[in-house]
Image (tube, rainbow, N blue to C red; front, side, top):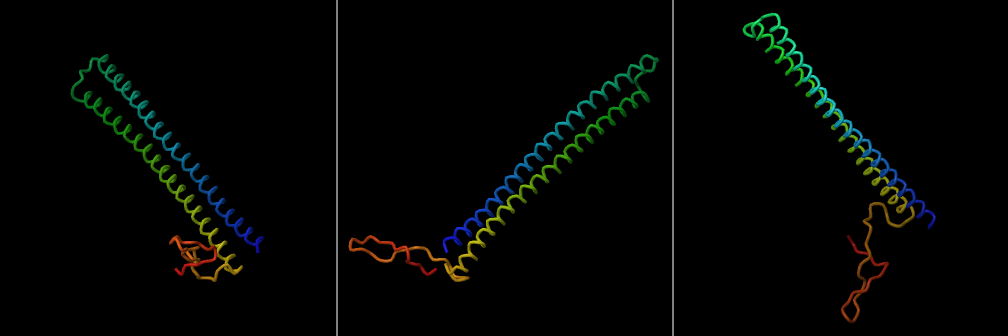
Length: 172
């Protein structure tokens, strides 16, 4: 009986340990995904800044080309410069939006992975409880479906203090 008890406890403990390792691995993976999300956001912002600098330089070169050729910056040439600025702003917004979307996707995946790890732990806890309960029922520790009684007061002494007996059961 003692060997069975030890085996049941060991099996339950291993179930729990497996769940803890699964949860820890999921937490590590989720942290990696969140780190990747932060990196994607930083890269998108850097790309947007680089593009903004290039767009500003291009607009300046357009302006200089117009002025060198004797074209006044009004009418169509000014419309061209305005269009360059508008397209640049749209592209910068698109670069940042793409980075934010990728980061959001990675953060969502991180949340899902973390939830899967928590679920694995909960499943292992239930498995451990089931193993111990099934073994206990098979060994006659308690009948299947019986509520496990807790040790409780069995009598009172003359001084009014309660004494406890290891074998006393409470009907729950």
